Image (cartoon, rainbow, N blue to C red):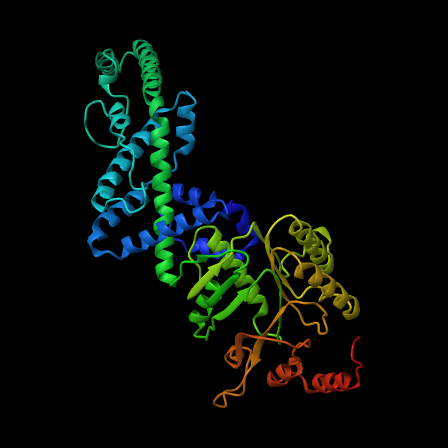
Length: 468
């Protein structure tokens, strides 16, 4: 379920936080959505989103859509109450009020929906709840309020008059009140018996309204963020994005007046290895690919100009966020544990695997050996793996990409930590070599690092022996 994914995916969490859901029922529906891998189910979800986008853009439907969303704003999640009713439990007077209010709301929503038609293959075909509403509205008031009406029992009108007249006679009043409470319990029990056969149809109406809330929120987000509908592909075709962007980072850059550069990337079965200078956006790229894949498989449109996505069984990442200091684990111990878990899963499941600079916290000789072993295992797997690394001379048969990196000075603009992203080209290009870019000293120099530090570093580089 999506709610289990949110604690480990900041990107997906940000996406869900930006959804303009109207109801607690819609929120519950969203959090319980499964990760879909079936192309038919995903395309149905995309079709519904497309219809919702068209609906929101249609001026002729503006008023009924506003009426529908107003209904959704008042929608309470009464699923537990309906479950209790279906199980023949006796409800409280408050529960009956909630049911009546919901039935009234569903009838109002159905009227608004009828003005739209039904572009969602039955979603707006809300069940008719006139009968359960009528059970709780015996006097035909057509209002959502509820109490134990006099008409529910022939003895109630006279008993209530007697109670009013006996206000100054405590003993008689106590007896009348006991009888009144007994009658109300009898009425509530009978009402629950009458409503119980309607529990399933009311639950159906609740789920459709909750889903409609989620669908309209997805459509609104797709329009606001200019998301695109993914085209689903088979494993042999691969995943490909044009103009892929990170929603959270793009929003942040826009707030700060900074440039944001989308990227194009293709992923194929086996391993894709990415190299590039420091600060070249490799970590962000991995997180963005993870977010886009998860969005696609939870039925969202994705943050790209064009997207072709291969559904997978799951997305596994090791992007430096797994260190567990509370359990006394070092970065390396945590990372190795996560990578071992990923490898074990990859032997029986088709995964999208995203690993950022593995073994970067251990010594370079052993680190390179670990990374080469990892790359060789993932290169022959049946999933898709994307790994970033600073290690050179990795002898493995795989596809290699490189972030273009630093560009020449533009208009004599001084480079600062705040402006440095203007000097980096984040686009990816094929890389046939086996050596990663060495730009750390150049970047440090441009950022006016301590001169003594830079001089010592240059001398160390000149005197170093190439690693085997």
